[in-house]
View 1: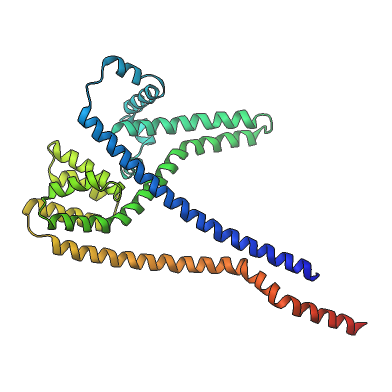
View 2: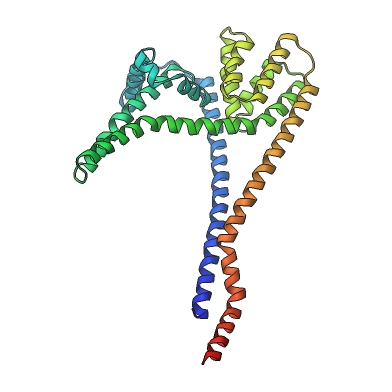
Length: 327
C-alpha cells in the first residue's frame, strides 16, 4: 500500500471520528432546543388558561356540536366504546393492571384514556396485519405469509404498550431529576411563611416549567383534595405510582406536616442534601460509563488513524529496505 492510500485511509478514519463527535454535539443541541420548546409551550398553555379563566363564557350548543364532529368526535366515540369494554373480561385482559399502572405513570388517570388505549391496541392488532397482508400478498405465499400475519398481529397489539412503557420510563427518570428541586422549593416556600396548601399551589401555578411532571402530579392531588379527599388519600397515587422511595418519603413528610404541623425547614434541608449526594453519585457513575464508551470509540476510530500517520512512514521505509536487500 502506497503512502497516498495510507494517508487517505487515515483521513477517512479521522473524518469518521469527527462525524461521531459532531453527532454527539448535535444531540446535545437538539436536547437543549427541545427543553426550551417544552418550556415555551408550558408558558403558552398557562397564558391560554389564564385568559380563558378571566374572560371565558358558556359554550353554546352549536359550538359543542361542531366540536364533537370530525376527528375529535371520532376519538370521543372510540373512547366511549373502550370505556364500555374496560370492565368486561375481554377489556381486563387487554388493559391489565400493569397497563393501568403505566397509564398512571404517564399522567393518564381518567377512564377516557384507558378506553382510548384499549381501542388503540385493538386497532393496531387489526390494521397492521391488513397492511402487511396487502404488501406481502404478492411476494410471499404459504406458511411464510401466515407467519408474517401472526407477527404483524402481535406487533400491532404490543406497539401501543411499548410506546406507553417508553413514555412512563421517561417520566420516571424526570421525577428523579426533579426531586431535589421540589425539596428546595418546598423548603423555600415553607420558610417564607406559606402554608402547605399555598406552597403546593404556588408550585403548580408558577413552577410548571421547571417541574413539568411533579407539578402536574401535584395539580391532580390538589384537585382531589379540593373535591373532599384527605391529604393522605390525594397523595396516595403519587406515592405508589412511580415506585420511588425518595418520593414516598417526601409524601409522608407532607402528610405529617398537614396532620401535625411543625417546622420542616431542617428536615427538608437534610433530605435535599441526601438527594444531591445520591445525584452526584449517579452522575459519577454515568460519567464513568461514558468514559468507557468513548474509549471504545477512540480505539475504533482515532487510534488506527494515529498509528497509520505515525508508524506508516517507518513501516514503508523498512518494507522498501527489505525489498531492496532481496534484490
